[in-house]
Length: 328
Image (cartoon, rainbow, N blue to C red; front, top):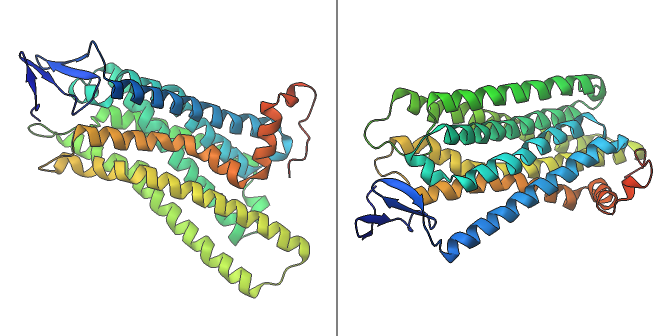
C-alpha cells in the first residue's frame, strides 16, 4: 500500500494511524501526536479500566458468595477471567504496539500480543459454547440436569477450554497468523493459519452454539404449550429460562462483535483489493470491546449481580462474613 503524502522524503500516514509516521520504510511515533491520537488512547485506556473492573466484580461475586457456586456460574466465572485478562494483557499490549506497526514488523512482541489475543478470544467463545451446552441440559433435560452437569464436570470442561485455547493461540501465532495483507505471495502456512485457525477457534463453536440455542428455543416453546407445572415448577422454569435468555444475549453480542473481524481475517489474504489497515484495527478493537460488555448485561438482567456489586463496592463484605447471604 503506497502512502498518500510525502514530506521531505518522509511518509506521513495519518490516514493509517494518527500516532505513526513512516520514515525510510520504518515506523516511528510522531513527536507531536494529534488530538485524535490522544483522544483515542484516552478512550481505550478507559475501556481497559472498565473491562478489568467490571469483570473483576463478576469474579469476586461468584467466588465470595456461596449461593453463586453453581455449575453455570463457574462457567460464567471462567468467561469473566478471560475477559478480564483481555483488559489486563491485550488492551495495553495493543495500545503500546498497535496493529498497524505489527503489520510491518512482526517481531517477538507482536507474536506475544497476537498469542494472548487469539488464546483469550478462543477461550471466550469456548466458554460460551460450554455455557450453551449447560443451558441445553437445564432446559431440555431438567430431570437429569443436576446429575449430569456437576461441578466436577464443569471443572473438567474449564480445563479443556483453557488447554485448547492455549494450543490454538500458540499454534496460530507460530504458524504465521497475519492480520495484515500479503504483499507478494502468501505462504501456505499463513493462508492455512488465517483460514483454519478462525474456523476452529470461532466458526465451528459459533455454529454449535447457534444450533443448541435454536433447539433450546423449540423445546421451550413446546414446554410452554404442553406441560402443566406446579407453582414451584413454574418458578424454577422461569428462572432457568431467564438465565438462558440472558446468556443467549451474551452470546449474540459476542457474535456481533467478533463476526466482522473473523470474516475479514479469513478473506483478506486472498483478496485482490485487501481492506485498509484502519479497518482491520477498528474491527480488532470491536472484538476486544466485547470483553467489557458482559458485566453490563449481567447488571441489567441479574438481580443477584446488582446485589453482589452493591455489597462489594460499598465495602460491606469486609465488615463481616456475608458469604451465605441470599442474593435472590
